[in-house]
Length: 233
Image (spheres, rainbow, N blue to C red):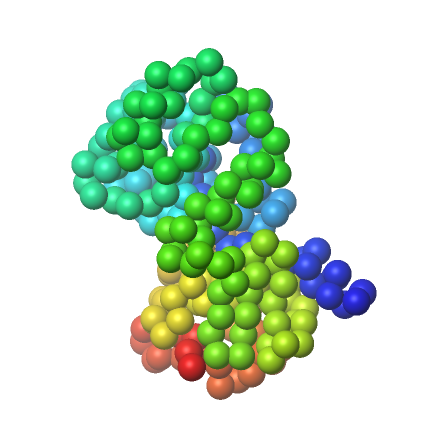
């Protein structure tokens, strides 16, 4: 039981988040809190910069404030959906902005969260939205003998709890979301780290090696010159 509790404490849901919020105090609090839960969080304070980032980078979730310099949040959302980008968007809005909430949902936002809010509720909404967008009605993700429960942050191999570091879990989560798909080293790094993190050139290889040791060498395959894939059934 102690091992399982330790594993749950350390395991975190893999996610690349774009936070667009011009309030310095709130933005710093959200970035610090979400990063503490293992998310890779890139924080921008300007709507025009956010629109540019969304055109050049892949994100799993966008947390979008509406009152922004450069370009307001509704304009960013309109441009995003106009490009047919389906990344889930959660609007962060002042409690009284009912018309803005309606406009945001009509423009293609997936959820909204009125300010002020608890970090725990935001994380729960992120998990629920990710399950829906990934086609997982159940939170459990599996590939062969591996099962990942983002709600409890438990990883098991053939029913046995596996203790992973935070980064090892992030890498596994990136792979298990697309079993059988080849993910390049760059794609994995983008899923694991935000823009401001300095990383070693061999960081992916180190984490892959550790995962193979803790899971099974046969479950993660290297495709030379392309990347890595998680072997399915």
